[in-house]
Each structure stands twice: as C-alpha cells, then as structure tokens.
Image (cartoon, rainbow over all chains, first blue to last red; front, top):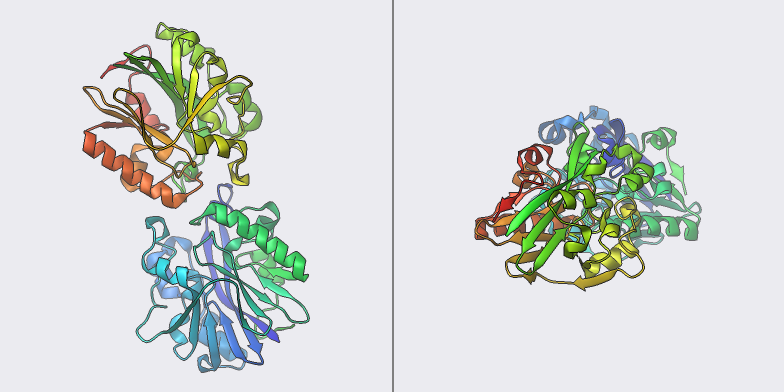
Length: 245
Length: 245
C-alpha cells in the first residue's frame, strides 16, 4: 500500500487546547489528510479545513492555506482527481477534518453513526468544532458505522471516543504498520504525558482512548502519526512523496 | 436562619480554568465556606484550602491565606468553635473545598457517595483537584448520600455533577432564598454565558447542571452566590457580618 499525507495548511490554537489545562504560548498547528492506495481502491481519511469557513467563523485561529493546499490540488499532486476516491472516511466531523468533503461528491462517505447524530445536534460547547456543516450536503452517500471495523484488508478503524463521541483512529496494517491517532492526542508529547486536547466531550473516555492508542501501537509494532504536531509534521513526507507500507 | 461567609483566602488560576477554553489573563479567585445556623444546629458547607498543602502541591496557584482566614479562626470570629459544628457538608472533595475538614473531627461529614469513591480512585487529570486527602482521616464520621436531599428543614442539596461526579449545590430556603452554586460555574459571567470551569469530568453533565442552577434560581426566586468570583465576593458580607434569611 501507499500512503500520502496531504498538506491542508495550518491554524493557531491556545496551548490549553493543545493540552487540556496546560498553560503556554499559542501554537500554530498543521492540518493534513491521509490518502491510502489499496487493492480495493483509493481511500481518503479526512479533508482538512475550508479556508473561507475558518476565516469567517474562526478568524482568531489565523488560518493559512494556499490554493495548492486544498484537497483537489493535493490529490492532483499525487496523480489523482477527486473522482478517483472511492471511499472518504472522516475520523470525526470537526471543521478542520471535513472542510474538503464537499469536493468528494463521487465518494462513499464513512463516519461513525454517533458522530453524525452529534454533529447534527451538538452540545453548546461544541459549536466551533461542528461549525462547518458542508459535509452534510443533499445527496451525500453517507454510510454510518459503529464498533471497530476493517474497512478493507488491513485498513482498520478503531473506536477512540473522548475528543468527540464517534472518533475513529486508523491502523494501516501493511509491511510497516502505521497508526493515525487523529485527535485522540494532538502531539507526540501529549501522548507521552497522556494529556488530551482541551476540546472534548468525555474526558474519561479520552483517557481510555489514549491508553488504547498506546496499546494498539505496542501490539502491532506501529509507528504513530500525530494530527496536529508541527514538529512531527515537519519530519513527515508530504505529498507527492509517499510511504510504501 | 443566619448565613455567614467564611473567608479562606485566595488562589490564582488560568482564565481557561475559570472558563473552559476561553483565553485571558490569570485571575486571583476567592475561596470561602458557608456557615448556616439552623434550628437543628450548625451546618458548615466546605472548608476552603489548606495553605501548607496548596503551597507544597500547587505552588503555581500562589495561595494567600492569613491565620485569620483558617476555619477555626473564622468560626471563632462568629462566636463558635469547631466543636459547635454538628454537620459538615462538602459540595465536592477538591483541595480548595476540604482543606479545613481535619479541624472538624467532632462533626458528621456529609458527601455524595460517588464523590467519595472518585476522590479515593480518581482519573489522572483529577490529580491536583483531589490532591488533599486529609478529609479522609481515621475515624472520620462520613455519611454518604445520593440524590437531592433535604438535610434539615429548608436546607436542600441538589445534585449538580459535571465539575466532579458527586457535586452538590445548596439551596437555603429561608425568607430570602439563597442558592450556592459552588463549582458548577465559578462566576456570575460564567453562569450568564453558560461556561463551565476548565476542570471537569463530564462536560455534558456540566451543561445540564448550569441549566439546573438557572432553573432552581428562577423557581425559588433565589439569589445565586458564586464560589470563585472575586468581584462578587467583594460585594458579599464577610463573617462576622451575616445574612439573616
């Protein structure tokens, strides 16, 4: 299998959002999506944020995104078009993970059933998180799932709630097992220290999900990739470079 | 009935602790206890923080407390001794609400049953909150309760979880109904905006508890007192002054 990491730009958040209740300087964090070429087709995980939405609704997050950092442009960089993506999976439905969904109208869209229900009827403190509703367009081919699911041979989704009610993490079980924790923790340091993001709906579940990520990494001998860790991101290969796993 | 507010000094917290995920300047907040003289005896609600414990375990909170701001000294100011307190109630078992419990060895101590269990076996992110264990001394006359409870005529404890699993708020139903929200919200502005503290175990329950405080205040025509609102505190009567309710 091949894995590309698609650069979607960056935003700025408070340190207490990066690590719950841990004070510090504001930090610019990356946003990226994960593209997997599998014998069963092309799978895309998340679609980053939409620049116009973020600039309008969350201008304080100082979004930066060039036209080359949008989903269509990033897919093109890898030699694909939006029509080539058979399956789009959203780890969860926060604005910085669904911004490009609207470009993938030919794809089946897979999301946890609880996540869909919550994004449509969320708690008041989830307002900014679920503020981009453009994933929920007329005619979207939504397939809701629950439990741990093997999407295709070696492509596993593991339930890791806490940050949101229906959050999934992804294990790519190739020659080189690769685990995308998505927003269970934002950074490598947060995983080491066991500190979840400041945005969450169930911090007790969040603690269990951090433990689960550590156990999955250990059990499968997997490298863990972090969703919003600028230092880690700068060390990753960015599309069109890829990982052969 | 008479109500005295017993000054226990102050600590400094991050603004994101005062209001979850809302950035701002650090803020010095008051800590106080509530003493009620009732026909059935003397009831004390909470006991503030212990200066030595806080200085040692949470020095970054810059505790300030004079010898006159301890529970024994404050009771004396009102003409009582620690032996006069028949019933001590802890709204919850965080360090800044149990620091003086150890001086009340003659009192019955009433706490929510889930709160006691949690304080003894807490989540990792509750470490600082439950760091003062001196309430749990050998021979403590602990009486655990659950549900909404009328402790004595007109002294109501209402379940308001979220900040902690077994948090209680207090309604004194005298001629002038008075509602102590304790740590459901820290300030008047936080109640208005519906923003819970940055420390919590169940933010969804926290939202419901904020709603409950508003409904109780409305239903009973009660004045709401805030646990950690410096501006509000400076407008309250401090012991030995009291409220006749």
